[in-house]
Each structure stands twice: as C-alpha cells, then as structure tokens.
Length: 149
Image (cartoon, rainbow, N blue to C red; front, side, top):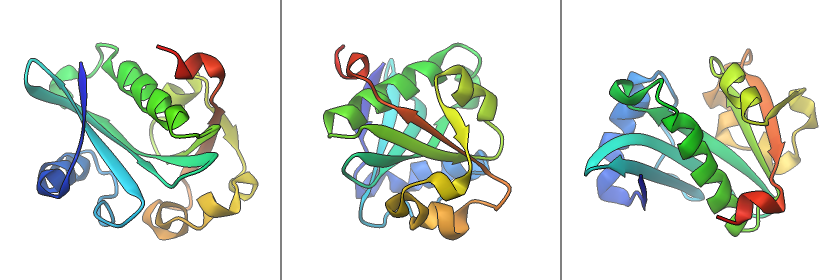
C-alpha cells in the first residue's frame, strides 16, 4: 500500500468518495487540511485526512473503497495516518464519528465528552457544524511506538 498526498487536482475524486460514504466534504479544500490517497497496484483503496497542526490534530474522513472493506485495510490506513501525524509533532489524534466508533475503539481510541476536546479541535468546522451533534468524540494518544516503522 502506498500513501500519496492529494493536491488540488485530486479533490474531485476525494469529494466523490466522501459523498458516497456519507462523510462531510464541503471543506476539503480549505487551508490546514491534508488529505491522502492510498493505493494498491495503482488503484485507490482508501482516503484519509488530517486537519490542524501541533500536538492535537483532527483525523478526517477515513474511507475505504467498498471493494476493499473487511480486509484489514482500514487499520493499515489508520496506522499510516497516525504515523504521519506523529512525525509532524502530534501527540494526540481526535475524531468525530457517527458509525465507526467500534472500529476506532478497537484501534486504541477512547470515547470522551466533546467538552473535553482541546479548544483548537472544538473550533474546527467538523466540530462546529459539519458533523451532527450525535457524533461520538474519540481521541488517542500517539506513543513513540507509532512513530517508528
């Protein structure tokens, strides 16, 4: 599996994939967001993104192509995004989800009250209006083991 940073010309496919997965996509081209395409054998298998900088980063819109779901690729993509975030100085990843709480808790994320999110995370569009109020807030501390490959 290879990870590629998405540039402006790749945002159309990203928006389509997020739309099909019922994930927010209105702000993907806004500053401060980095999205990545994951490929195997030259075919996209997943997308994922990160928003923000510093010790606390928001995990954005992880989606695996329907043909590749159920094969453990979501965990591999999540691990790559965690490693990348840690390499950029993140100590914690934060996220909101409507339907993937089980996936994220299985991968080391813990559920918290939204009021416990750092101010920089609470001020993101994701927290303010893109995700419904019913979305669960989860966070994971990134240890040194995540940074090493």
